[in-house]
Length: 393
Ligand SMILES: [Zn+2]
Image (cartoon, rainbow, N blue to C red):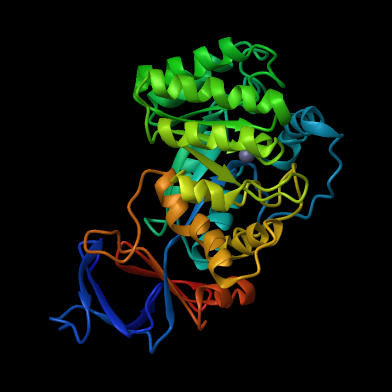
């Protein structure tokens, strides 16, 4: 936690040059010509200032960033990727705290100040991935904060022993319980959710469930998850990741589900894949449902793509949503910033008390920042300069 004065910023939503004083890691004053009072000053000269980017759906444990280029050869479908991931991991030295560290550094210089990473927990490697991610986060020394999700990538009920390992991960401080396609992958939706929400209740943990299942089957599971969130009073603590089904069903069904998400306080995380219809971002926003964006896996056995850049992810989200107007493109940028903060239960913005997490870029408007993706001139985490002109500080 540090003190810092950001001088002459153009903060998102205002054309006036504004100063932000950060004290003890949080915004303490907003105005013009603020006195420095011995606090270090960063003159921004009218650069655009955005809230620190939040990567609300990452899998940093799987990455090979900074390692060899490994040609993709997984079999088709979810099962093919799961099998390939488990089989190919050991020979490649995965999970690797070094690769994870390299990716986290890349995320920081790209402006990401907070992330939620799913971390595989399975019977082949136990909690090795959790340990590797924790070690890498420590090496970053506070430049980025990362929430972990104990994630049963290889199955929960279909892989006996996994639930016990997830219990151990939560006992060791992992803050969220993951789940995956309770119906499509596990073929035991109620039992799957019993285990996931049971663990959440035992540890007071949040829940974040991968839901790739599409169409009516996917929507049915939206309803199962929403029912649990309502019954257990978990408003603001349950996220559905991907949730492709919502982008696939008729408008009346979509409207009904969106209203229920809002009522239950269930948030969504999307990675804007090319292979699925986009979530209805504008309707979700109008209903007040928090939507975060994430990079998903970056250069791993699941996909050779990705670079950890949330501004690029906002571009993908805008393009997938066929957004062209500035105010539409800003909805995509919101998912990469304020939306991700809401999903992860954090404050964000430019008000007194908001965290001192910011990114400054050379752009005239937020929409231009998304389209051009300029080098991040300054990245500030909790009032500390952590990257400058694309280099880690
Ligand atoms: Zn994922």
